[in-house]
Image (tube, rainbow, N blue to C red; front, top):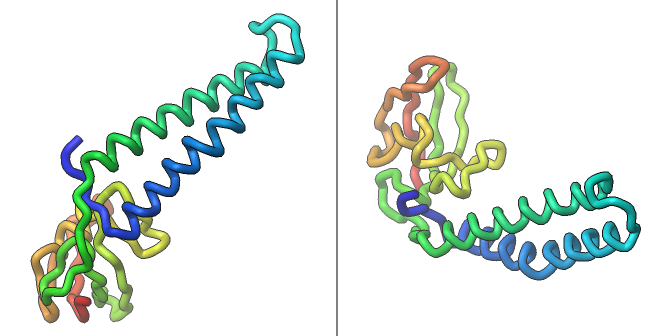
Length: 153
């Protein structure tokens, strides 16, 4: 994995998730494992024990993933230039006249439903380096389209 680009908010959010998994979730899973073992019976036939072991594996995997991500992260301060970069809030106008505002973020914190689009997504990648007034072509899997940059902040 290469460098993960994160906004300060995205970095804090991942740190909070890591802390929650380490302190709260690990304890919850350990308690589930303890209770499943206390029920007795054959471990092979104990569905609750198996479910708890699977959850434990997921939690530990996510902790490792977050530790790696945060240790390789590059925090990008809010963009202040007139050109689109990671951290920029960008308003674009689509060909049908509709407008949308997005924040360009690294792939690790992308959440399109929240308006956070990855710098590696077709739209994010196409916008990078451009300024207000530029019309850029976006090559997306569903087909190419154009957007005009209305505002960069």
